[in-house]
Image 1 (tube, rainbow, N blue to C red):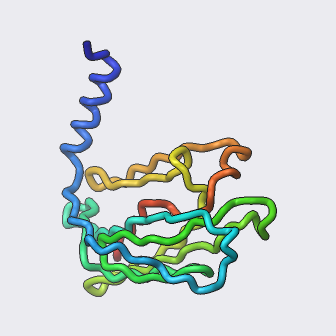
Image 2 (image 1 turned 30 degrees about the vertical axis):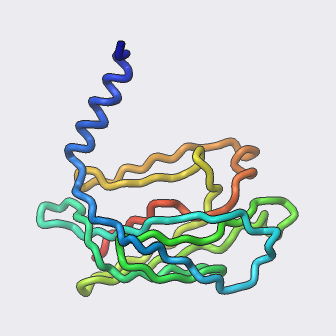
Image 3 (image 1 turned 60 degrees about the horizontal axis):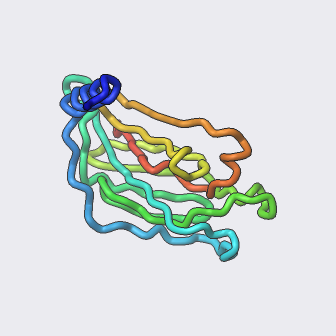
Length: 171
């Protein structure tokens, strides 16, 4: 027997997906970001990924995904280049008191160019983990962001990384 709450959630998800802007196919090649500085092995936590997508404002004012934008990603520790939409892979950093600044890497600057348009954003590292992943998506031309806030004690046990969804609107 389907519970009323479950049915309501399924109906809401169906309505949202019906209004969603069609997605472009993700470039199948995953780009490995290059380390720019030496990082002690003891500070590395394992692989992490981020998906870079680009958008432009459509004639109706809604965001429309634009493919083939060339994006550079650069932090103190990493650099990389993707053609949207594409995944990048890097190594997350352990978060611990024994590391300077609790092991927090530098901010990631992402700059994308396509068709004479440009966008730049700076992303601060966040504690990675299912409970802290910041997700953002474009639904019917509007950005929807969901963030779960953790207590300081729990958040400090997750490795540092960057948000999974990196969405830029080119102007």
